[in-house]
Length: 598
Image 1 (cartoon, helix red, strand yellow):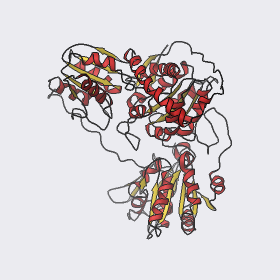
Image 2: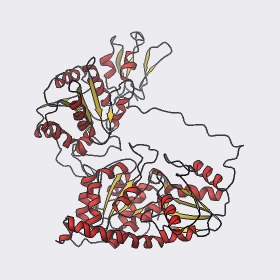
Image 3: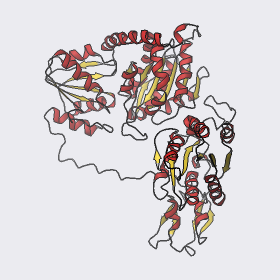
Image 4: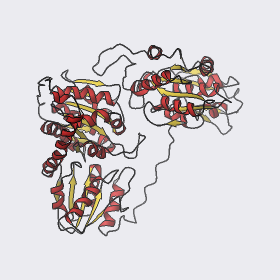
């Protein structure tokens, strides 16, 4: 049966076909749809969960793999940082059932705070990594990854990048699901990590890398073809672009497709390098394949020019494209890079990221801004939609480091600047992810900060996934809702208030009160994400009452509000969610009269 599938859907269906029993993860673009697709196609035999964070997800999956089940963990590249503690130890302890970590990299980056390359993590952890070049190959690789994991007794990493995750292809998903009945957990000293065991296992793992390199040299995911004195090596989506360019330029050239960057298929690489005078390496992000070829050439005494990122032939940062690869291959092969008669493609217009019209976070930020006007204050931010609060005219996010860091960073600044008022903004899902330890640290060390939980009832930025505060699970169950207010109080935060941020006067008053509290105080601004609510209609601006002061636009920057040629404000009804924030700040009462849409 042929299906048109997005890469993430292909990975999910491939895992189901391979007999996966437990799937855990934390949402993060570009990986989120993998777990969601498993849940959508679950016949009831697979346990699926959004875990509170990637570390927890890795540990749940490890327990399943200890028990002989095939398990999969999904996350984006920065999520692997959070999961790295159990991952590094799992490389030493090993697994019984197949364990595959899908860590999606985000070249660009399109929606991440780093552009890190997971292939380095694989090498650091001494774990195999597979690098798909198409959605079809991702479907095949995820199945092979489970087999490999059980064969070598180690977790295996699958590293799709953004264009693999979100590209679509027609894929043959025929065939029945494999049955892998878990044998159950068997008590064994191997499951308990000790220094002496780690020393012994480290030696064994290093020896295993050589064996894996030989296995990968015979893998169908790696192949050498063509002939000539020039060669092109590539991996991931860059390889797919390279194939298109080679075809379009009608080049007869030797090629090396690398689907398993680590352990590197050295024997196959040696056969590729044989007889070549120069090689162009095409890969997104870091020079992993390039450095591996340089090492082999140096060890073998081969005088081959290996070109890529280190030589400036390809860029270090950002996504590759057909045009980038076309230019690199054309210059490498001595051809003109582009037909000068072709018109240049105009650049896409830039659109600055902005909070949605009606977003409750705008009201929350504005309440804190008004309450702290004229006072020395620093506003630490976190990962989520609300990071966009850094943009003008709000200017309310002064720092953003990583998930959960707002609360901890605020404490560090407060220790250096005790006369500064510190507000730490954090979303509800991020609060559960890694925010709680920071709260406990602040309470324990008696730090004067205000924690502002922006509770919009969902994990909004990654596609509105549930979390412990929503009382819903990916298995379709209704669970016990974790109450953020009760949790804060239970760890020692004595002053906690829950406020609707659109009640502007009450919100400002609560912020002022919180800022005077000695120790840790917390405000929970509770209002649902507009994407979860039915659009109620739109407000209108009365041109007769509007004095063209521009305060509404200047103060809150709502994208539903525009200034006309007469400098008077107009509200775009298709964008307005009638949140009422503009109504509360207009000094002339010019906004109101909700207009309902048909």
